Image 1 (cartoon, one colour):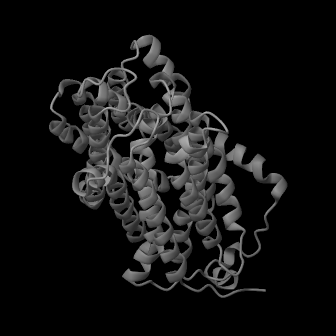
Image 2: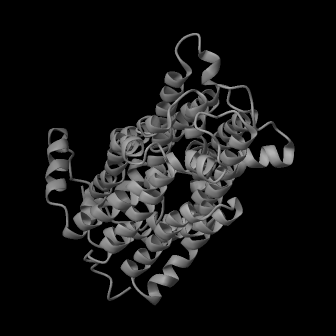
Length: 451
């Protein structure tokens, strides 16, 4: 039966904000993990050279969970909706993991805290992926083409805002509310534990906000919007084979962007894993193995503040990116941003005043804001529309693979090449960011003359 094509109605500004509000909570939790997981694992007895192995949980769960959730959420329709069931399950599991991770020491009778902590980190990562993946699809489901860039801009802003709040929370609780920043050896300080509780509350509240305020289109409505998809049956046996074939035959620009993403995400992973121990040892001169002193707590809290700065800068910078692209083009904009990030990371080596490290983080913020946007802008103009979904899923491989490589080899490099000094891993991150900046210039961007 022929179905008349119907255009999607434009949504109000409030509706666009409501549908992405859960992203604020997800990023609040994600930022708490990024800023404090190394500190928590070290408190439970992890050696600095083993940290990157524990951090492998994130990319490993991402590479497995994201495509599966994306695949099934495309095919789910029940009373709650299409994407909303995944938001809800993801929110419940993430909130539980946020509460349990800093309290792993309480369960020490069952297993050593380091194993429980690592297990909770993996559950936290998997749960965040379950909640996060369908949020991107929801923008595509609900918004007409003309409003999608607005939808993703709002998401980028809320990503930044949530990350600023999550990163700064341990520092704020200690500095302004007097919550203790130190505890006995092997015990996570109260300001970190309460920050994770706050993260669980904010995440649950914002995802419930999206669930209750956002309406999803029914299968019938989606058929009216996309009648051309009506007769395209799904062949499950071809699923994996088709994905592999698409991977092999990916567009040239996507392959070139893969190299840019490798350097970028290798650098980011090093920064997330090693900044906390590097700042503690190199700037605050904390002795190796000390995870319970006031000085170590000050260093860790300050890293949270530094991370909140780069996230804040990225949120504001995201709004300036379209203007920069019009002024130059997408490749030059991304190369400039990555160069700023690389120099920012390398500059940490030359700075002994903690407050001046904020300047380093401004550079990192420019890179992070661009990494969240520019590769996708370049990629989307090179992909066939009917394969946008599968190629966006495959593109996630270029984010997770470099993190897995770093997770396996990063700790060995720090131990054997850098003699256990994590500051050199941060410099290495800066060098990789600069390599990413150079490699962008060799990407074929179809739109660069029009941008």
